[in-house]
Length: 597
Image 1 (cartoon, rainbow, N blue to C red):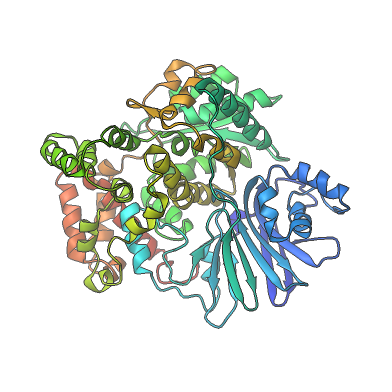
Image 2 (image 1 turned 90 degrees about the vertical axis):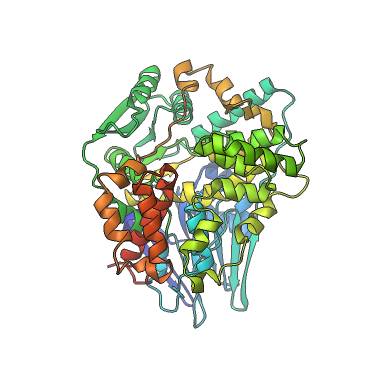
């Protein structure tokens, strides 16, 4: 995993524990070598990420007699564990994947940050033992890892374009859930949460909520400026990244370094003029790169292999390109990720608002309205109308499914489909929607716990680290997440307007043209690509008689779906992209469990 840590490497061999680390040097450049021990070298840790409040924790620990040898935030982990034992993660504010070896107790701990910003995988080996890593590709080098494809994970991928944890595409590899600690001893292991998302008390008024939010966002940005290497920000020209840059400009005594990319094609929506407007407003040192020729054939193979398992997020390629560009200038970049999930920034939240308005209507009547109005609606609204008669968990899955269950059942080979329980996703998501918790806030909470760690944050981490760049996400400071979780739903979405409170506070510092312009996102034009520049590439992968996906999917069903898209069915662009990414991933060698070359 040299791309995750190009600056240093280290090992600690203490049978039965073996720790290894690759370092991207950001804090205490000369003294932060890992693995890193406590005073008597009985406790060792390897760690990926940052602990933003380590200075305050260190001061407290030193008063209690702990002796530090370095200025690294990594050393706080071993001392805090000495003090608090397995409960130690609850005191840390940061993003982290941690392994800690306690030799006297012959105990290994694995810890993942509250929101899942940093990935952490583990595998129980066939002959005993436990392997763990920041990326699956490292585990594939370990003998005894079961690399058979998991049919339930595959079906989840076809539905959602990512695989919800703790599953991965492999039977024998699991994700450690966000906010959890794994404790492994010779007699077995346990996995338990140290944090659950609980809303803070709702502020007394909309105005007071805005004040608390701004103060906390400013602090979340300020503590994420901790760095001994060059630091900057991604600037898309959208509301979220503009607010991060505004807070950075307020906290820094020098110009913020900002980075934007554009694409020399009429098909790709350019946000560069808006990014330039924000850069001028805050006097940033702004860098822009125009990508003139995107070799998607090469890039898709590169990014898909790095993602370790099928993940068909269409923004992965542009995220990698932006990360690689920024890495030419800085080692750390702040981003605006997470605001959409906190403040209902996506179009599909309109459905939840609409459903809440229709809650008085009997289910049978809602179904009838959907059936009557559906044929006259556009594609997005038709899907919303189809969902009108569903309960909240089923609607949540249906609205987020790229391939609905009826299409998936036709795609999966019969022997594979028999291994997939019906409605398994609906049953999983049902846990987020107990009877007393439904409506918009429940949906936002489900997205925060499901889609964020396993799709969006996984994509950001894997693409930025492929470029050896550390991405930091101030909107996902857990204090902010808890605060916003307690806001009234109408402070987030009201009468067709998203991000209500966020836009209200943004109007104080940003131009109206930035605050209220339509959301575009970092979205490539995959539909036109598949019919145009990528058509031969898609056909080579999906129509090939030797396609590797034919082990799990019915080739004729795949062919029919592709032909329908080529004939003009716009709604099938993302399903085709999901199938293409699966085949590309299988061809990287990861799908067969083969280690990287």
